[in-house]
Image (tube, rainbow, N blue to C red):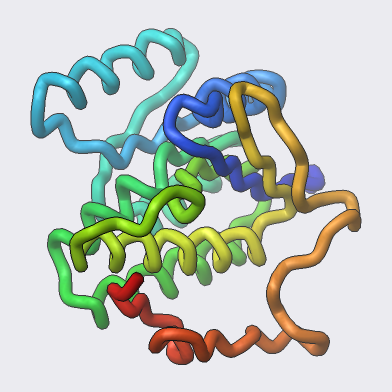
Length: 206
């Protein structure tokens, strides 16, 4: 079986992460599936979806699912060489708006487990890095920021390579044995004790 990898592509808005992910997928070649998590709720989002679709071209299959991407990934991985999910941040936003905190955590846990089991298929995940700006002024936005940070950490631990995009420039921050992620020695996850995060839950605080 071909030695396949899981990639996490991180960056801010318009940092070039989607373009990088698409180029990576095209270089890997083979049958490709694009998983879109966005919902066309307004004209701006409709325009962005159309832009992404035009950029991909006709040699891509597309699946749209704002919630159940773990099931979709598990079902489709055996049929494709490359699956690109864009983006995890919108998926997380959909979960937070639809479900209570406990359910959000369950779905994130399940996705991480499924991602770790995937064999024989390259998986490319796009996500926003949202924790480098100002502290949001409202509780929901702060909770989203915390959830996004925790999600990115968990996906990064599972990913074989993590790429950070800044101003269209890529920097590999994990891969080829040149970096470490947050688990303690022995594979135990580091306990987050600051501001109510000891159980892996966002605090909603600044």
